[in-house]
Image 1 (cartoon, rainbow, N blue to C red):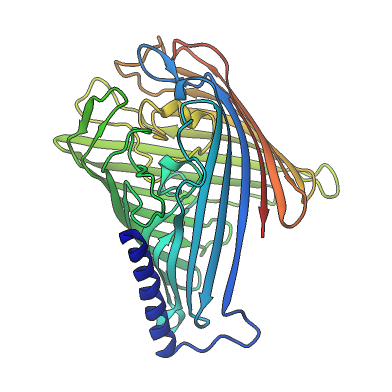
Image 2 (image 1 turned 90 degrees about the vertical axis):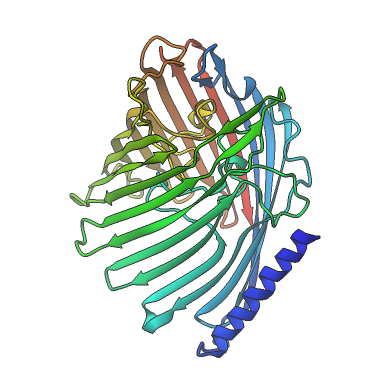
Amino acid sequence: MRRLGAILLVVLWSFVAARAVAESGGAAPPAESKAFDWGGDLRLRGVNFDDIPVSKDPPGVARGGPNVFFRGRTRIWGEFKFSDQVLFKTRMTNEFRSYEEGSGKNAYDFPDEYVFDNLYLDVKDLFDGKFDLRLGRQDLMYANGRILMDGTPLDGSRTFYYNAAKGTLKWEKTSVDILGIYDPAEDDLAINTQHRDLVGLVGAYPTDMVESGGGIYAKNKSIQKMPLELYYLFKNESDYEWTDAQGAAHKQPYDLDLHTFGFRLMPQLTESLTGNLEGAGQFGERGPQDVQGWMVDAKLSYAFQVAEKVKPSASVGLYYLSGDDPDTADDEGWNPLWARWPQYSELYVYAFDHDGAGRWSNLTMPYVGLDVPFSSKLSLALLTGYMFAPERSANIPGSDDERGLLATAWFRFKLSDKWFGHFLAEFVDPGDYYKVDNTAHFIRVEFSCLF
């Protein structure tokens, strides 16, 4: 009842605030626009994966080995437009899963939780059109999602939200977002709560960890063929404790305070040749330990015509995340901030389970890719990369730094404006970074519809 009361108070507060702003100068919605709108979507997935290696000794595989399950996600949203400037939006999400095999058999049973993954107020074009403001629970993604993408990583792709405030300063060719984020382990607004941890590092075991922070993200298009993005982000990961399946208590005793500076360039070199270069460095402290890390995400793509409406794109790239040097007292491993999601691989994100769920770090991956849009309704994306570990810590079970060969294939299809989906197949042939050598696989079929 307390959570339901909190939800009603948030909705009421947002309604009153929006009405006050609208009456103070916002024009009424034009007669042809909708004051209220709503919609929803349904996503159905079948998943099969096995033999995904993890970096622990004695050696093992992610999620206990074979996992075969079905997952269904339903979402419904509604928005009320008070004026051209003021809008309130909410979206409710539910996901349920059915396991044939795997470690999640008791997770996400129907009807599970009802989660408000969007609950925000938009106020646009303040101060003569120079400032936008969004307050409340919202999705955020910047660049290719290497630093900001998923605020709730431990529920997979059920939700991505952040409890956040975002203000946007706007000029002709420049915008600057100012962010504030506060994401606790548990969702206090969930109905039928399952006391589920959303942000901790340890996967299945609930913690009381809080991730908070914010920063500045600037975009500039002054040079038409060389868009530039610059950012600074601060993140705090709080102390936390958890109890594992055997009843043993664990504690992470030190707060992490981390500062990250980065840039992104997107050059249009010729009509057919384009690039992406993102780089970032970070430093901070975890108790008495100094923390630092580096990230580079680089890609060069060339598009070529093979038929009137078919223009494939071939690419070559490099993804680099620093690792922790075992010979120093510092921690040099890259911290992915709010980017603990599949990134380059739905399969390999599970390989970081032992390091912290979705915690991409200590990785060098040169790769080649090919994207083929056969039509507006059919496309194929292929990627092959070889993965290395820049550093080898003492607990790595294998003999060297080769993580292995990664191959991914996405076949996306669109049946109509409202029905679409994909087929995904991924494989990893583990290298000598691991002691296990079975080829890992991840297979997924998805159908989605809008209503």
